Amino acid sequence: MSASPDRAAAAAFASSIDTLILAALRAGTTDFAGLLRRLPSVYPTEVFRSLDRLTDRGLVSPGLAAGMRREAGQRAATSPEGRSLLPLPHPLDYEWRFTPDASRTLLDLAADLTPLGGNVLLFGTPGLALEALSLPINRQLFFLAEDNVVTKRVITLNRATGSPLSIAFCSGGLPRDTADAVLMDPPWYMDFIRPMLAAAAAACRKGGVVLISMPPIGTRSSAEQDRMSTVRFAARLGLDVLEHRALAVAYDTPFFEANALVAAGIHPPPRWRRGDLVVFHKARIESRDAPLTSGRRRDWIELTIGRMRLFIKRGDARTDTFAGLIHIVEGDVLPSVSRRDLRRRRALVWTSGHRIFSTDNPAVVLEAATSYNGAEIGSGAQPGLWGNLRGAVERVGQQLVALAALEAEEERGSLDIAPERRAVWTSDSMSSYGRSMATVSG
Image 1 (cartoon, rainbow, N blue to C red):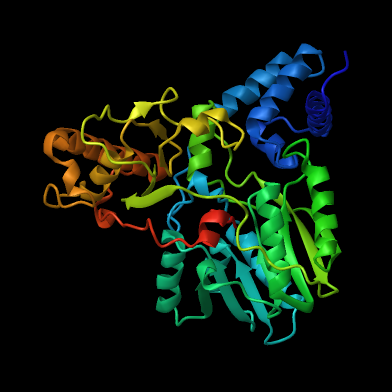
Image 2: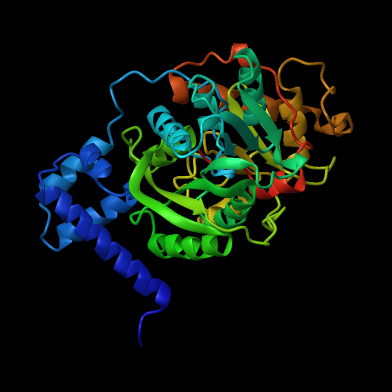
């Protein structure tokens, strides 16, 4: 019996990764960090699966593969970099942010492709918006994003720097035919790429450009097919390919992904991930309307404790039971960032350090999170839950504070979270569009 199409595609992808790794090793690469950076965004765990295959076939020496594993298993001796001015990315937002150098390159490219004084729309890219605050490019800059704590921080920083950005939430509606350039970085899944590209095409005026980051060929077996499908879809939106730059933009490794890889036994080098850049020219005005929703709904409530962003799944309040935070994976950190990981479906509580938990009473977790920081007991969002669950609320509140302290230590080597101990309620401000887009990367 012949292999299924999915298995055949997986086998072909694995073979292509083997070929890429062999080429890099034969070119003289002997260290894991160097190998990872030479590859087209091949995920680190996939690299080691390939090394195992190549070792079994006698094409890579066991000593070389073992040396790379030892290197990957060692935490870097360098001190951590300074904190970003933005809140941490959260895995439920599928948010990766461009490096500062990549952000400057993209903003400069947008300036080169647009007339002096033209309009540049930063579509859901908070990292680009942050860089734009300190990089004058003689263009009118607009930032359109989800209503969440990240965007609210951008608003605060924008005001502090003289408001060089015009900022709007997706809930206020989508612009049409106004931008000379649109910069976007959707999560690398087609159900995000298509609606966001349609919205970007609608916002771009005829003769303008849309710049989008796409997954490179080493990301997954469907990456090349997805890019070609995106190009065909873009043509129906009036967009023609102007340029394709492979591996043109670099990303910072978000804290949640670093934790996931550490849970898998890998300490990755910083900024190993890169994306392809596709530049479209809007040659035609099509009648297709920009979608207001992608059919996705985000049923999560978000709060912050220190720098930890905490997402809690919406659930009915119960006053009769509470088993606490229920472990899903050993060590609590999910060792994968793939949306296809089935363990994600069991998560009802999710931190920005990629810790996931289940619970039999999400409302109690929510009450604990809103009351954790020394406020009067019972003054949280749902005081009716206190009563016979008072001890449970206090206990889980202490657990959440401990998690925030642990993740602060992991992120920057410090247990001090005092400057940011106020919980922030941001649950009900999302529009249907904001919920559907989850948030975008960049």
